[in-house]
Image 1: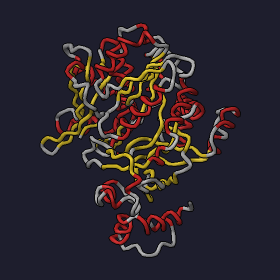
Image 2 (image 1 turned 135 degrees about the horizontal axis):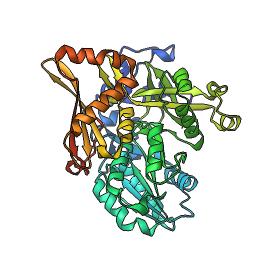
Image 3 (image 1 turned 120 degrees about the vertical axis):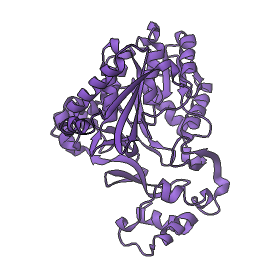
Image 4 (image 1 turned 30 degrees about the horizontal axis):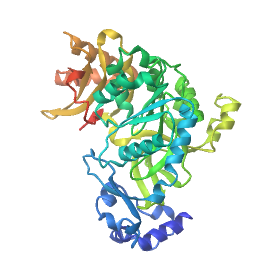
Length: 449
């Protein structure tokens, strides 16, 4: 459907969208850019859910879920019709055959995601359960976000399978490694991760590969797609897009020139059923589905580029020829960025750095960042979870973190010491806590608020 035809159709058939336009005094639209942007707050949380679908179509609903059970801005109850997920199981099956050879290798799939009403975890758990029932040699376990139970299942049953494919969040991987670090059989190229829900750096993927006994260039060790409960599938990593990202990661000057950032964004094969725009650095999506979205702000930083921009970068003729014509790029959730006195700090790169410290730091694979205020002064407090606490460890971490942030950002380096001197106190605080004290059965966020 033409985008203007879709707009007019939704306007006429979706009561909530018609109300939204009326409240924004939108009568006639001559240009696409005249259509106001919707988002979770001004649309999905403002109008009743039954007014967000086309009138008289509720009988098509087959699933009621939640877009998020953890968002401080509120959870959207989300309706799905079966057409929204048509052929989904078959697509996942083909993907797992291509990426993990589940038709040839016995496979234990562990779904370590939030379950309950959250659509992402629920949908994947149901998909793999259905798929396992039809696939010889495939077994699924659904411990949810209890990572200790997840690790226990891997230890107990992993030896009975050729491979383990863990379906989880990227931020859970280092914790799982900490829980499995003595299991030599499981760290010998046997474990793969199909991950969802979070941005991660290419360095993180390569370090994960090495930790779990793979070649650092193995593109399937940690592989992801991009989308949400609200928008559905928007893109997926392919072998070619990952190889392109690895190239950019090893040539930061090219990444800087193309994306204004030495750390390359995540790159995906774009879902052609969605129209994507970049407005104010945010990815804005138009997509027809049971809850149709017209110019919906995902609050993710990203956009769509043509493959031609990579033609003269030195990536090689074979890789260039195999790239899709359009590539979706995503830097991650805007709300996950941390602004420190006007400097945007790359928190995910901080995670890569912590992960690279020598064994004596006893890093447990998890950290959290909280912006705190004391007597009108803002501080960043890092909580670093360690395998064991040792005297002087907090001071060592604080020193290393400040040093790393100074190297990473000239702006931070120029202002940090002067700002700290002005208040006679370090503005970067660090405290450590044993990983054993962390509730590993509860979803965690790197950036807390």
